[in-house]
Image (cartoon, rainbow, N blue to C red; front, top):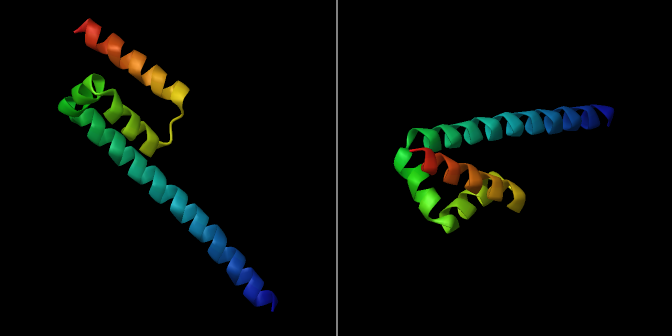
Length: 79
């Protein structure tokens, strides 16, 4: 009985750790894709709905979305 509990605990921890690293890897790839595609950044700057969808996928709250929009506006003004 204790062996089952130990194996279940090990499997749970391994799943959590594996899921965490897979999530980080996916998140980084998504950020790299967004940064390397200037058209996507300009589209998001022009289309606030698209930015909100991407932000929701990334798990950002409204305050963080507003901050990103402000940064994008400042970036477009500098060009």
